[in-house]
Length: 304
Image 1 (tube, rainbow, N blue to C red):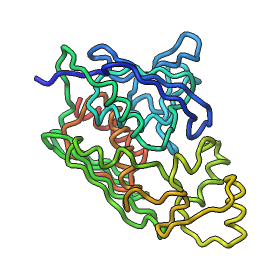
Image 2: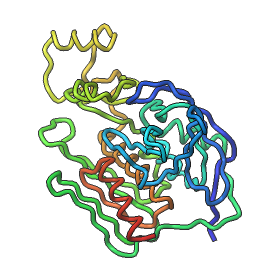
Image 3: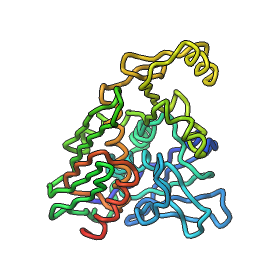
Image 4: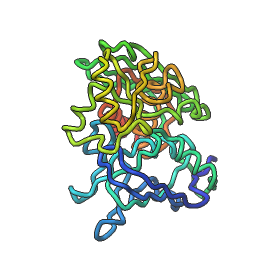
């Protein structure tokens, strides 16, 4: 019998939210068996709790957002933390934070993974329950080319295929893990954005906390000297470097398919919202937070 697990101690993270720009302190804490993942907004009167549940997802543009019983109580950009907890096979965790968004940190799940490994993982006196995929399940958005499939498997495996039409940086990529034991292949991969999207996202009230330290910026178009100088000024830098891979950041990609690996990291985090570890093989094409969490809700209906 597999036992449930929780954290061996507490770990605290401080940083700004990618979208809100608000500086938040977040602490992950051990929790009792069968507690699952629950967030606690300690800055809100009554310290309301929000369960990490796909049915609580209220917004998915550039991140996954949960909403509590009160419409104004939200937790944004939860996917990297959720990914780390699920990949390290943590079943129960209380997450306390004093703001509306999980800190983005370096844009990956690595800071969470490193902290959890440091405080350790302990077994609990309760049996681990799985969501077992017993038949093929398909989610599609044909107009966007989105397709996510779940197939029966004795363990969790996942593949992500990405393609951005017209992009010379991200035409076609894929990433695959055959087990959560291979999570180290994706956990340090950073979130990304196209340079052409930045102004639009800012106008939408997003990425207020974004910078070159917590996100990869892909440049699809050629920039004139004037455009480069203007961009450097906006970023507070003397100059900007665009690598041959099309990356604007000071440091180049960690992997040639870092973007696809990050999408796989996100997929694991979003599917953690089914409330149980999954035994099944997931194949996702052109997926994002909206489709991931919609698929999570579909799985909850079919396999719970």
